[in-house]
Length: 331
Image (cartoon, rainbow, N blue to C red; front, side, top):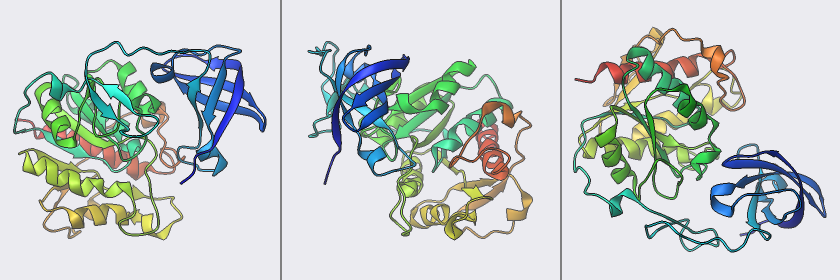
């Protein structure tokens, strides 16, 4: 196990906020770096920082960024808020959150429709699909720890917060930074059911994947079906349908979706927007055909695997259809 670290000096702050964008001069050149100011404090030109360069050193497309590990000119940081639950436990990056389980009793059962998304890029169109059917509904997003762990990294969450509809976020497992913090996915479901009409659950940006059948975090959809069903909810799956992916395993209906459905121990509803899938046998899961809502998809700068709406039209339409279907089943 290895981690790439470099010490450098901030020569420019190009964008401030919860995720500050800075330029850091190091012995290997100038590095474009991200700084989570809620974790390591504000940054300014001239600060000396230690940055994690691992992902960029490996030339990773997903998660390929340098991050500030510590700001040597912004110490000490004092813990002031309540709570004792640790996330990223027993690592040099462990942090304290005040989990909702420490504050209140949680419902033991849920009745909500829960949309299970295997890619973070499904979140935005799925939420828009819900509001296209009924703009008065509250959408809850549970971010699991299958991808990025800080929710502040998500541009989709930022857009959904800015749109103006009712939207709440819940971070479960080692994911952190949501409106509500949860220790487990089950408790996140319970929490979201109390405040939200429709729940969307899925990892943050940066799915972890290999060419092997089970070596991907995308199959958390299968365990998600189990969790939703066990608590009494209604699991609804967005299938991953790709038109422009050159990898055979993701052409058309992705093997990741099929693997998740295979490992699920309870039935779910799998929503498609095109009737060409109507005869597909996914038993014991049910194929549902739902028309996608008419939205200006191009206005939202939708991206999945760096491809836009024009390249992956059915992918985004399917996610929006799942959102509309979930809204339609509310009693």
